[in-house]
Length: 205
Image (cartoon, rainbow, N blue to C red; front, side, top):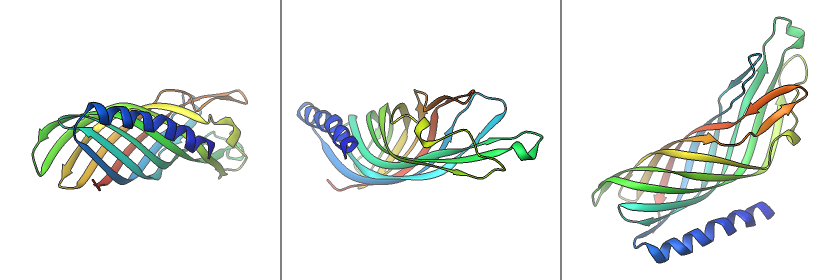
């Protein structure tokens, strides 16, 4: 609950200030699919993509140039494995992270027609972790625990979108700016969260 309040306090002033400065206002809901990968800089550890989802709301303020703050719940994560010749020493950990994400994006409409528009957008995002879990799948236990992951993370999102009437489709790539996990039991993970996102939205207003 505390993290939700922090996210709302971050979100609402941006909305109120922007509405006073720009003209057109749209409010909508969205759902999406994530393909997330927790990177690592260790040669002995591999990382794979993990599927997830997001659900939430967005506000768009402005016409050709617009501001778009969002608030949504998302599940992300990744799969770490230690592949060595001795199979008895192999470990595999599947990480699942649920968070409240608050992107604040600046967009520009390349095509701004009445029925269809084509957009580009980019901006920072804050992620407040609300739940996390790790499942084991190897011959031995892996080094990570849920307490090794930071509770607040930052990223940059960039992508493109298209609107048709009241429907909106976005494709974005999210680049993690800080380490989710740095070093655990002499494993220097230097792990950052990189995510592909496809989302479908509906402009209610």
